[in-house]
Each structure stands twice: as structure tokens, then as C-alpha cells.
Length: 160
Image 1 (cartoon, rainbow, N blue to C red):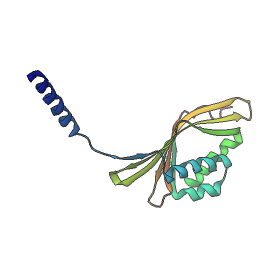
Image 2 (cartoon, rainbow, N blue to C red):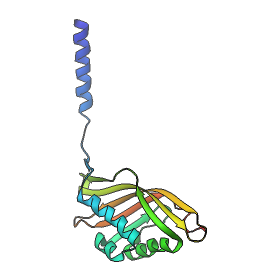
Image 3 (spheres, rainbow, N blue to C red):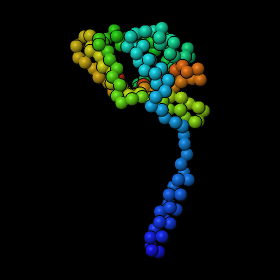
Image 4 (spheres, rainbow, N blue to C red):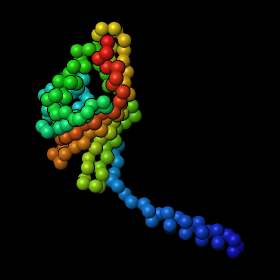
């Protein structure tokens, strides 16, 4: 019985000791209005709807994509994303899993992260290109996207 009491005491002491280091950094949501905004940003891209894009993003929004030296502004981003349709037909963005809304306690930061497979059929070769990517949308206090970061291997785009 003494062995059992000692083992139980050590087990409880371990739980108490390890639970002292737990600290909450924010909250992750599977459903949130900002997730809808992020999904609408993708829909606006696919529809080539510049007016919808301007409603979703802050005027001062910045965009960065893997391989870029520095972020670009909204007007330049709209032109860049529109050029995809000059090179590819049947462009699709297929969600992988589901997006998450992350509300960090530090500075009340608001992000949506979403995973996609971008695909398009090359107008010059007929080859279908697929790119796995993750997007991070940062929201301002007005509910507008003020930063978008996209990570993926875009090295094969616009090469043919």
C-alpha cells in the first residue's frame, strides 16, 4: 500500500509541476466570419473580380509570395494575380482540409490560414500545373485583410 501511495503521490506531483507551464496564446476557430472573408478573397481571384478584391482588402494591404524580395501593394497584386489568366485556363483553387481563424492574444492579432491546391492548364502547352500552397491573411480592426502571405513552389509558373 505504501508503494501505491508513493507512486500516486509522485504521479500527482508530476501533473501539478507540468501543468504550471501551460499558458494560452490565443484561440483557434473552425468557423468565423473572417474565414468567410478569406474564402471570398479566393473566389474574387477566380472570378477576376477586382471590385470585390478592393472591398475585401484594406487600401494599404500588402502581399508577399514565396520568392518575392519584398511585399507589394494592392494595385500591383491585382495586376500580378490577373496575369495568371493570361497564361492558364481552367484555374482552380481546391481547398485542402479547412481554414482556421487564429486570434492571438499578443496585440490582438487576427489571422486566417488556409491550405489549397492551385491548378491551371497552360495555354501554350496544355500541361496542367498543380501547386500546393498555404495562405495567411492578417486582418485589421475593421475586418479587412491588410496582409496576405502565400507560401508554395511557384517556380514553374509562367515558364512555358
